[in-house]
Image (cartoon, rainbow, N blue to C red; front, side, top):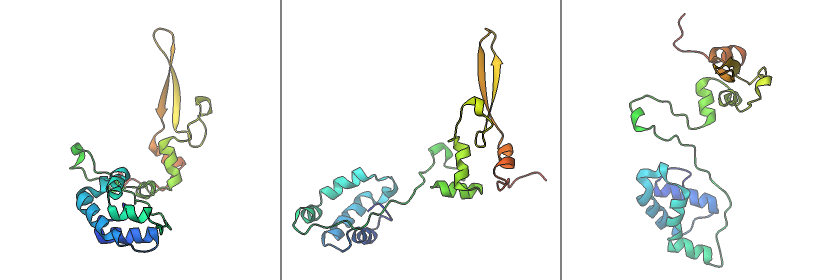
Length: 173
């Protein structure tokens, strides 16, 4: 039900796809769900929805009857980007609900996002590995002990080495 818009007719279409055939109880359930959750559809979680579904007499009797519905397909909820916090409401932010959308916006391949996340983190002694993007510096403290400082390599260095497609739209030429 959550895998699309909150309109009752659309929910009935999705329930029919999932079960392979329409059922009488679907229209009433979809109208009830649309009325209850429609205005905040993007923030409804499956646990909240399942409580309303479990209270629907038609749904319950269908699943307790001898000719029980069969799930023939599973529909997943499309990715959704949550609204920004109140202090960022005036900021113009791109809609990037998936990693693929983020990668496309950055003009890089999705696998290259691993660099930003440092997913391939390796010990300091192996800092020369391709995805490792920190430099390490040992600084002696006044008390004689040492401190290791991790310094991120510049994005410019990353772009030159790993992602020449990243461009800056406001570059000074």
